[in-house]
Amino acid sequence: MEYMASKADPDGKLDVDKSRCDSGLVESLGEPQEPASKVKVEEVEEDQFDSSYGSSCLSDRLDSSYGTSSITDSLSEALDKSCRIRHEDNKKGATESRDKTVTDSPLDPYTFLGEDGDTIVHLAAIHKAEACALHFISFFSVEVLEIQNDLFQAALHLCVYTNQSCLVRALVLRGVSLEQQDWHGNTPLHLACEYGLVQCVQALTQQPTAQERDNLQHLCLGPRHQDLELQNWQGVTCLHVATLGRNQEIMEHLLQNGANVDAQDGTSGKTALHLAVELHEAALVSLLLRHNADVDAVMYNGCTALHLAVGRQDTGIASALCQAGADTFLPNVEEETPQDLAAGNVDILALFPFDDVKLGGQPVLCADF
Image (cartoon, rainbow, N blue to C red; front, side):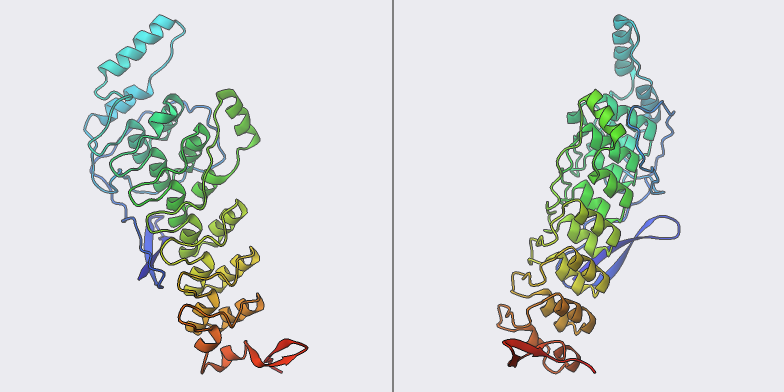
């Protein structure tokens, strides 16, 4: 089977490289395309969501189906009018102004749903209308912000997919759910890990700053709990996704924020350590071992990471696992031990103890002189 690992090409667009391994997982999202229509939106004054996260975005303009346009010709005018909603000092005047804006607009921002089930917040995120999106995020209720379109994407999914970390942080602080899953079972954090979007990962997982906490106390808002062991429909956690993407920075960040280093996938029981061995990534193996990964964790077929390393004749990784205390006599469901699999490979056999020779009750290891 093929694993997909995301990269950024010289133009800043996301690309997908294929690497060969056998964990039985496949890439879930297609490559984004450019829709037919573009929207120009008059910028408005940003609300209280002041964040240190950058707002660098992908160059393509996207919609919820990652390539089909559902935007009408009147969207620009509708967004312009929606962004001009203001509360007047006089209560009656404010009500009349708001009613007129909502009633006379070609699109009602409170009830509008596009042909793909997109709300006005989805559309603002898709077309990177950051000022309008920030206004909607502060103006609409959490229930509206959590509406999912026909592909089960909430606005937070689209803000991540378009790499708008400023909007991601605003939605997180607004208190939207961080565990909503799209039609592939991906949470926004799964997407950020899949595409290597470090700023979005940080925006989704970091605790509020002192300034953000002051704003949260004033607004009675706050980030929601996030289950870092939540699996998508392929049975992988965010740590698995980051490992498959060979992204050490994201892996380190997830582990420091409480991700379970020994979490097993739902299809074969592999941990991140098994995946790193399959990818022949010694650096990832070392990182996981530093975070106390269980070197003898077994898959559903009884194989440890050492079984996989020996089976792939990867002497370097096998040596690292042995130094970490891997059991060379642990059998899998076929009653094969790593020593059995190493038969004929002198370099790997030299790493293993002799089971029939012991000194002081301890097995004897070969050593080079």
